[in-house]
Image 1 (tube, rainbow, N blue to C red):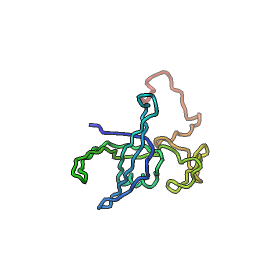
Image 2: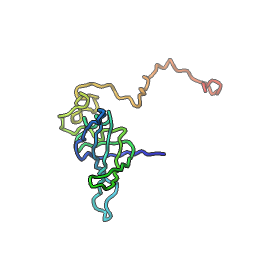
Image 3: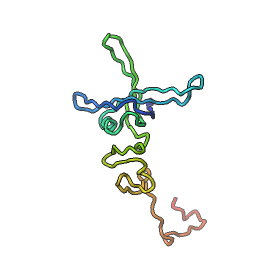
Image 4: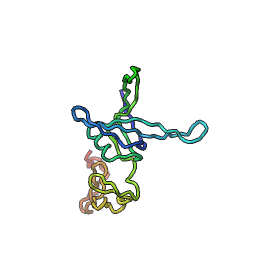
Length: 168
């Protein structure tokens, strides 16, 4: 069976961080996700408000670095919970249990008030010069792979058209 969901939208309020009786962190938040299409009359697009919950380190991360209005990408699973309200009625609710949460936008231009992990990311400071708020980072590597530097021409040898010389 497969139960995987990925949503991208803006937080409708600051995440609420709580702790269970055993001290496990749990953050709850709501994401406003615009639909890809407009209404029946071709008007404005509708918005879905999706409840999310993040546990442990993911919950602490969301609570620490995300605030109302920030774009967030949530990847996880859809969960349906049943519960009884104070009047004794049986209720059901759907929520996304977040496995991973990512920034869906960069720190807003001109907003230098915050920092991520001690390195301030204000405006467009992480542009061409790899300067992350005063931290000069090396050129990014993609997927942990760094391309090798060009080898001197003397390291290459021409192979003849004979397939016997091929290593595979």
